[in-house]
Image 1 (spheres, rainbow over the protein chains, first blue to last red):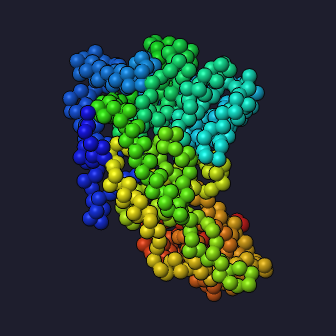
Image 2 (image 1 turned 45 degrees about the horizontal axis):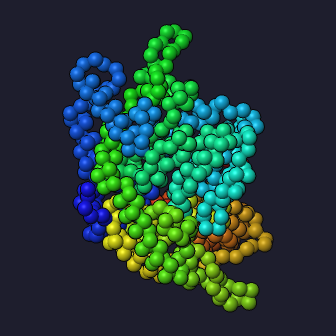
Length: 416
Length: 121
């Protein structure tokens, strides 16, 4: 067990100084920093076990294959799945595209797909492409606090709804959606239920349930390296699906015109896979298991709660999503009102105009103080349209953030 | 937020108005940032007689647009278009990080696109 939170000692990047001062990294929703343990595992793999996997018969190749498959098992255990239900991809986006190009291909004109207005583009665009063939894409709406409207969900769930795909946690509002309940509703309707878990598997206890047909998440958002992602799929569904990419590794037998494909999950891993990524992600899982996912969630809930409390006291700051930290993760999208802005009225008098600073200006202001937040639309433009804004600034937390980061953030923000 | 010079111009822009008798009107929008700027240009065909703007954007794009309108009056269209990006960015009153270059470049890019003559470039 790692005894203190906000402990940056394991993360070499926090030794970095910009303009002589430490960095306050508040963009873990975009990507997380990497602990020494993950970096060591990647170097250790190349120094000790590197060979191509699932191909050759010599000892080093066996060892590389074993390391790769052991990583798969460790990641599967982490979410409560069997290892042959874990497909390695590049990231959540590729996991969802894999589903669009396999499961999605079986949809016909008039079939429907139900997603929500708070999805990341990665859970919108793979489904939007199917509209070209007459598939209808429906969006579940939100209430004014940023919760999913479950009555709207039920009313939009039709007999023709073949797929329901929902983010477990919004990457903007932070809203944690009741996916167990939504999964039951989707399965009662006979729909395939997909969970975009990019923002939940890294941040809270997560176990595969019977209702979940597919679950997608990314390694780099949970202390692992970039370029490795996961698609969990129920084995019988993976078996029925056609391959996504085709080529090396994913075949049992090939003649001039026919091929017999490997069993899942290898069927979906054409070409030399990202072995260092799998090894790094497995080390990240070990790091998180060592803390305990209940503790990760508790810690982020605490940081979110003290931050929201401070923001509540700042009259010029508006934040989005649920007010209750139990209902949201450690991501806070916000805007700052520009109380200085003047415009000339018709008589030529200066009048104050109530408007928001552009989120890029907020981020640049904080950047000057070494506080790193994201700004813009967060790859969720339909949500921005729903909220009737062009963007927000966004601060997000992870295991290495502590009270010191929250204090630096709040005191910098209060200088605007 | 930025230097006094930038904030003063943001709060008191000098060319932020609609022009009724314009010769060229350029709509520019950056969908990723939500910036929406309209440039109104009065010209004798070669030189800029006047230029104004309306719209919404971040502080850097608004200040850059307002400065651009003011500085362009009396100048040749081709000369404005041909100035290089780096010198344009360096002439901006505050130092810009690479992530914000598009904000400052907004008016010049809009101007180049909107004054392109058919069949050329």
